[in-house]
Length: 356
Image (cartoon, rainbow, N blue to C red):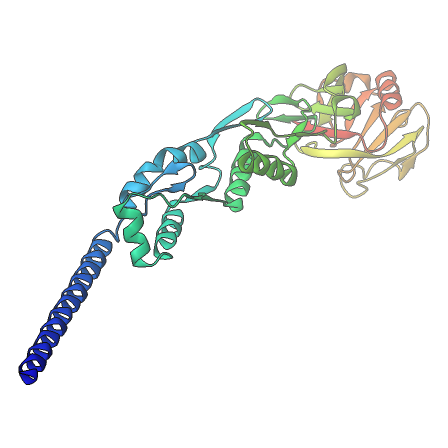
């Protein structure tokens, strides 16, 4: 009898152990299944950010990469399309932060957001996604500046703004007198301009003005001095002070066989009561004395202006009838009173332009 009771008790124990094992196995299988399901859920959502992620104040939680970049487009546009007006003198350029080298790393910010999601283990990610629990993380857009772009802009602006200074001048070309008035130049100090534009790009300024520097001409009308223009075809000599005509004189220039040289010369010497020295003892002057001292018969009159053209001078002449004709041996003759008047008005270095 006791043996039967012991056998029954052992059977009951085996049954309870079997049930416990079955329950344990069931729980383990259920937990494994739940874990696998959770892992699959996490993997299926791996292309989306965790809820509660913000970039530049924009909620990009639960978004894919493409959706996040699209959501950030407005913020990026506000940075890149910010207008910046640049003025220099009368010139105005309508630029933007982007055209002046600003760059926004959207991909980098989204990469950082996904890296933040990956920093959680998968059960934590499942928890936040399944229960929509925000992680409350804020990131910023990375903004960079391409400084060479600003330098390139300043170079382009300089080509439009910079002007060379022009000196006052007087010349005779193409059969007419050409007068050039002086004009100041304009320079754009590059280093200062680059600094101003960079400050606008990297700050919030929407309008800047670049400083210009005035370049004065080396020669202005008042400092141009005297210029003599001789028209051989008209037998006239014109004296200019700066660009203004002071006086005109009748003269005699070279005969066809002894033409007065054309070109640009200058006065290299001034002589009062000069001695005439025979320059052509073997040709036209062979019947003339070797020299003639100052006096009423001196071919040079009372004044002579030696030019940089060899053997050529502007001088008076006692032969008043030759004035107005091509009568000399290359020199420029004047009435003696006119030569004395001109002599007192000009100095060594005065420009002399001889044209037809």
